[in-house]
Length: 550
Image (cartoon, rainbow, N blue to C red; front, top):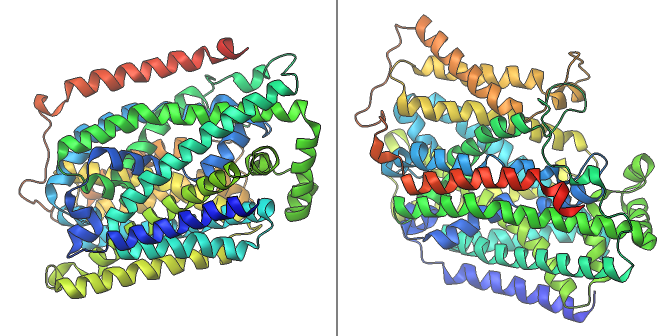
C-alpha cells in the first residue's frame, strides 16, 4: 500500500464521521431506533444484505469455494431457502409485528406471554450477538494485520470507534444509509476482484483442465446425517428455511430494519428485493473464489505468499494445514491489484465489518433501552431527553462490549467461535416458534413457552457436533448443524404444548387483536409467483453449474 491507498481509507473514515453528524437530529425512539419510520425499500434492502453479507463472507466464502479442503460451489446451497423464507416473512411475520408499533420485537412476546419470556429472548440475543460480533471484528482485524502489517489493536479500534461514533450520532438513519453505501463499496470490490482474477488467470495461461469438477458440484442429495455429510439438498432447504425466517423476521438486528420502513408495502418490496438479489451477489462471491483459487494452481508464488503470511501471523494454523485459507483474498488484493484499487478493496473489507458492527450496536441498544428501561410501569414515562440520553449511552456501552469481546474472546481461541456458531444454530428455531405461537396459538401459556424455549435450546446443544467436540462428548453420530434450526422448531413447539397442557391452572394471556388468522388477501399473489419461480430457477441453475463451467 502507498499514500494513495491510505488516502482513500482516510477519506472513507472522514466521510462516515460526517454522515453521523448529518443524521444527528433524533427526537425520540422512533427517530433514533426506527429512522422515524421514513426509510424506503432501496436503502433498507442494501442495509439488510450488507449486514448478512459481512466481512467474514467477503473473505471466507471465496476461500471456502476456491481453497478450503472439501469446499467448492456448494456454498451456494446456503441461498436456496432465502426466496421461500422472504415469502413466509412477508405473509406471516411482518403484518402483526409492524402493526404492533413496537421498537424491540421482544416486547410483542411479553404482550402475549410474559415479561420472563421477553427477557429470556432479549438476554440471549444480547449476549450471543455481542460476542459473535466481537469475534467477527477480531477475525477481520487479525487478517488485515497479516496483509497490512498494522497491529490488530489499531485495526480493531479503527473499525469499532468510527462505527460507534456515527451510530451514536445518527441512530438508525446513519446505520441504514451507512450500510447501503458500504454494500455498494463491497459489491464494487467483488467485481474488481472478479475482473482482475479472471485476467490474471488467462495471463498465466489459464487452467489446462478447467476448474476442479469436485469444486463445481452444488447440489448433493445427502441428508446431512453422518460423518462428511454436509451441505445436503434437504437440510439446506428445510433447515435453511427456518434459519432465514427466524433470522430475518425474529432477530432484532434484521427485524428492526423492517420496522423502520414507511409502510408494509415498502417492507414487501425490500423483502422481494432481498429474495431476488442475494443469490446473484453470493454467486459472484463464489465465482471470485473459484477463479482466484484457480489462479493459485497456475501461480505457485501466490500460494507461497499465502503460506509465508500464515507462517508469520498464524503459526498454529501453519503447523496444522500449511496455509490459512482465509488469507487468499487479502493476499491476492495486496499482491496483484494496483495501488488505488488496493485502498478501495481494503475499504470494502472495512465496510463489511463496520456494517455488521453498526447494525449490532444499534439493535443491542434498542433492545436494552426498550426491554430494561422503557417497559412495565416505566413504559412511556421517560422524557424524550432522558430516553435519548439512555439510548446513546447504550450505543457506547455495547460498542465497548463488542471491542472487549474482540480482545478477550478472539485470537486463536477457535472454541469461542465454535460456541457462538453453535448457539446461533440451536437458538433460531425456538425463537421462531415463540413468535409463531404468539401470533396463532390460544392454548400455550407462558410457562409452556418458557419451558419450550429452554428445553429445545439445551437438547439442541447436546446434539450439536460443535458442542460435542468442545466438551469431548461422542454420541456416535454426526448431524449437520443446519438441521438444528428445524429440530429447535419441532422441540419448542411440542414441549410448549405439553407443558401448557399440564399447567392448565396457569391462564393463557389473551390480548385483543394479537391472534392472527390468515386470509386469502394476505397472500401477495405477485410476490408468491415471483419468489416461487425464482426459487425453482436457482435450483435448476445450480444443478447445471458443473456443466456450465467444465
